[in-house]
Amino acid sequence: MAAAAGGGMTVAEKILARHAGRDRVGPGDLVTVDVDTVVLFDNNFMPNRWREILAIDDPSRIIVVFDHRAPAPNAQVAAAHRTGRAFATRWGITRLHDVGATQGIAHQLVADHGYALPGSVLLCSDSHTCSAGVFNCIARGVGQPDIVLAAIRHQTWFQVGATVRYELHGTLARAVTTKDAFLQMAGVHGDHATQNVEFGGPGIAGLSISARKTLTTMAAELSAEFATFEPDPVLLEWVRARNDAPFEPAWPDADARYAAVRRVDLSALEPLVAFPDTVIGNSHPVAAAAGTKIDQAFVGSCANGTLEDLALAAQVVSGRTVAPGVRFIVTPASQTVWRDAARTGILATLADAGAVITPPTCGACGGGHLGALGPDEVCITATTRNFKGRMGDPTARIYMGSPATVAASALTGTITDPREFLQ
Image: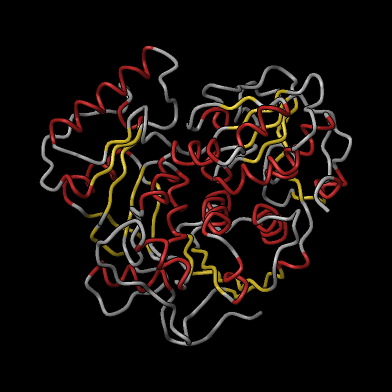
């Protein structure tokens, strides 16, 4: 569909304009904006990055999370966690997610606790911070100097990018997920560097928050600046149930200007797999990879470690057994997800099939711990990235699919269409 030619603003433009104190902004504008929420995670506190912050005047704006390597796998990470704890204590930061009851991946914790308010600006140094855009905010990963400035001065700057809107229609088939929808977008439309991505259309009504969050999280792999959803009752109720702070949602104008408007028919999608080393222009029907022998299957990460994702994997493997020689690793995205999956029997179903359940952490997604790949190994993963060396040895090959595709592949020992197990 051709780009809209009107003079209105998109969701991202409206939020940027509000936070810059301007009536309107458009592509190419440089804006200094107020920042509502700053998330610091364990990588920020590593010795090679951390410089002591000497002034925090509003600790209520700051969240501290230990997620990339938690519990600490070595002395260096343990020291970073210690630095983070001391920082939170010094400045009275109450939203500290340490190893234990409130542990989890930062982007899942933002969802669990309603930290991302519609219409707000949220920053973190992790590249998948755009995940929070599912809640109708603008959220982005920034470097260490920018995150420190935002923590101290509550401001940052952006150059406004053009927006591509995806209109979602129809409903997903049982064995198809929004991970497959993302893989189609990446395969057909390529990267979206310097652009924003906006999701809307009647199809979003049939998608859970977890399903929507997969799309905003994976927008990082499109090189998008911001990824946002237009607000609807499901989204607004999710936030209100978790956070009683006031907020102002942002709807796109009817005559908003888009670089492109693209229709996605969810009903027409099939299970897809990204072949190794990139997701851009590299998505194929699962049949194209069927029969490829695997050593490891992994379900987890900020993109696919939700209760819904784990439940889908459990449906596939229920009453069945993981193939000999395959390591099936499942990492819930937060302790809340872990507990809910335990209470509902999902973890027991996965473990009975032969899966290994880890603590909530980024874990094997980034190759840091709890499932790094060895030389020449093959993995199919429901995570965020599949580039060379991402999950361990650079000779390993990483295929990417949905949690259903990963679970089905764990059962057969080869990449497998999940529709064989989910009719």
